[in-house]
Image (cartoon, rainbow, N blue to C red):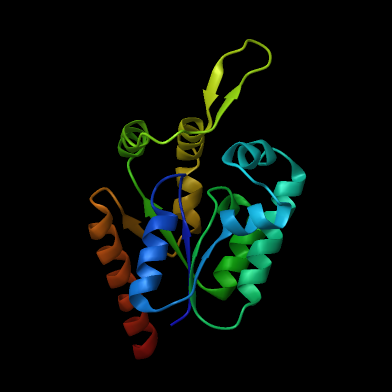
Length: 184
């Protein structure tokens, strides 16, 4: 089967599609954001976003990707948005599996975030007191990195429809990969 690394901007569906697809395909599922939080003992989304701006966080991401790349067996791995942008992490993912870029239009992501009703992590700019919506800011920031995701990925999947449609597409893409591997 193999390892499938899901990359993309925040809230594009990496974790949701990955977890559901892994359940359907009876594969182990790993979420690097969750693993990094456990490694660094981060307890809240606010802690996570604050930690994202320091070298300890980057080192934890490298450690998690190395751990997953070294694991024997198959799995679906939802990565944090920035992991694929770390060159040595991208190299490790390529060497140990297939990288799938999950694409979702930013306007759909932002609409989903606004309509979710969930509390999102907000940081206050200490200089001028303005509030920064970290999820919305992350979507805008990482959308700028689109070309890098595209260059790193082996395959891509458009996730602009429903959750069920996204899962169906991911299952079909992984099955197609298996067919191609078997034929070669």
